[in-house]
Image 1 (tube, rainbow, N blue to C red):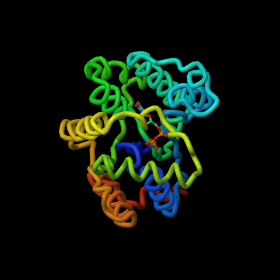
Image 2 (image 1 turned 90 degrees about the vertical axis):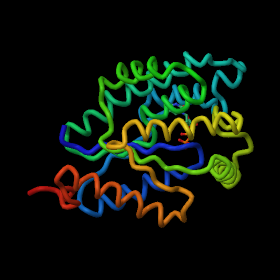
Image 3 (image 1 turned 45 degrees about the vertical axis):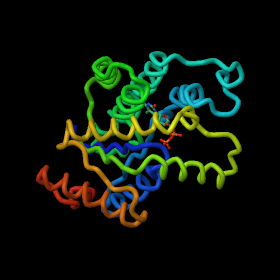
Length: 233
Ligand code: TYD
């Protein structure tokens, strides 16, 4: 596959969305159309699964007060991912397009594995089955103390006028989010060649520069420069 596949990861409220958009603008300025997508919910099927998972207003689980068991939760994220890879990510990469993905397989390992305590070997196999083994070329891990992230997420909810918490994980304990953060760090230590850790506690403009520099250094390692993004012919 010729495209470049970059995933963004981190605890809630770390500022991924802004960074995905800024990196897209930067890469598109170099001349190539970039596919920006996210999990859960990058496809139509994923949108329905996202409603179930995050209990957004109006969804059935919210109305029924249904509780999703941890294994069922992991399988729903996997179903979302399988559809997402088949419908969006793989075709884009095969067409040579760069793909920026807000959350991917590492979210399952961090949240369902380190956060919920499901067996990580099982989750690796689940990820493998959902993606057919498709791994990001580069994963930008936006790292931030948990309290900071949750405060930012709360602030964002208030600004957007959301009275209720927006997600399934907002009500989880500080301890849960701390395990997720530490889980991400373990994943990054296990695969240092794929991960770049970005210090997201810095001002947003500084975080933008850290992300750019991680991408440029990844491209250099692949023997390419930013000019690779320029449309050929
Ligand atoms: P979202 O509103 O997209 O949050 P964020 O902007 O932080 O990405 O909600 C996604 C939530 O789903 C987030 O709390 C992380 C969680 N999640 C998992 O637990 N496992 C997964 O595999 C994925 C993709 C997300």
